Image 1: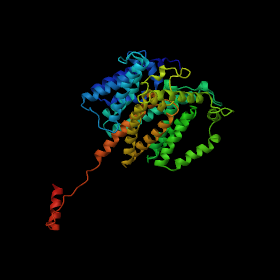
Image 2: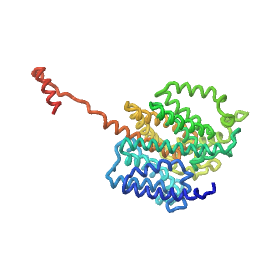
Image 3: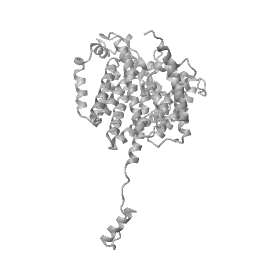
Image 4: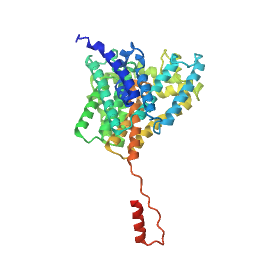
Amino acid sequence: MGTGIGQLVPLVLYAGVICTCVLSVFWKPQAGVYVLIPLLPYEALREKLVDYPAGSHVIYLLLISVLVGVALKGQLPIPRTPVNRALLAFAAFLYVSLWQGALYLRSDFPLLPTDPRFSVWKDYMAMPLLFVVTMAAIRTRRQVQLVLLLVCFSILVVDRSALMNVLSHNFSHFDEGKRDGGPLGYAGSNGLAAFEAQCSCFLLGFAAYEKRRLRKFALYGLVAITLYCLLYSFSRGGYVALLAGLLVIGILKNRKMVLVVAGLLLTWQLIVPVAVQERINMTVDEDQHLEESANQRVQLWTDAQELVRSNPALGTGYATYMYMGRVEGLKDTHNIYVKVLVETGVIGMVVFLWLLARLFSTAWRLFRQSGDAFSNGLALGLLSLLGCLLVANLFGDRWTYIEVNGLVWVLFAIAAQTFIFNSAAQPEPVVLADVDADVKPLTASVGLWERARS
């Protein structure tokens, strides 16, 4: 509009982050979590803060501020959850693997944050730290509900930016050059697709237990926008991941969803736009050969088998593959499971799967607890999201990007906290003492009643 106000947005945002850090330390630690949530996926917005002091580290500033705040309030350590030990083992194992990788590459040891491989590990560990920080700061049901509301707001903000990008292009036919990560920046178009697919699955699962019409309508409206953005992300992996998440909902809650998935598989060529059809049909050419990107994945996975065979137990070391230049100079295996096997071996894969199993256990326990509709919806949404996430990472690394999965760690934290709330609210079972056989029934009844009163 030419008003110049847009130039002030980064300054205002930066000032807001600094003020929030102060408030988190000296007033309410949860304030930092509230501000973090919209910033996590919006890498394009965070990028505008890099010119300010420590502007490229706003996520760490907020995380550390919250930790200091909860420590001053005596809220550490965090409550026990199925995830705690797995997180600690996961972080420690990867750091040891980081040193192993330095020996493998004959590079500098990962001692300082300036080391590029140490920086990769640090950025990765920011997501598990999100779980710890959220668990430590969010301690009431009202705070949990506010976090969930902010997550929905964050999804809407990302959708708005992605939607504006879609509407700015003519997608009557598929064009690879028009794909980008939009608000998720470095995560790329496939990362954006994984984000949209996971959010759609979570929202659909949560809405399945919502009984208030207005809220249900709002949730389904947000799902519709999110699915539209996913559709025009042109990510085949994102589409398949979405179907996996829908199947989870169909199996656990609504059998009609299984029919929806079957219907989509049978009729997609009739209902999806021409550009999307072109993208899906590009998987193989007229001679039934894999197209370039799919063929590259096959080459990467075939080459990775050699690395796994030569280093089966512990792999080559964390964050090493990007420096090998094995296949056409590509820096990623385009499959998180293959990447874990290559860099951390079978032992690393066991630790990784253990962590995933602990996340699943967090959602599953809450789902089986048979609590209120909010708890059931939160649990089903996370189970659906997890099914979507597991499949999405078969087609690339969508796991290590905080833009894609930062909100996932926050959601699992509030699910763990909700389970604790529900467990504390359940009454203790009443156990009656054994009655002496020589005591008369009436006397025994009076005695039990007196003990119950006391």
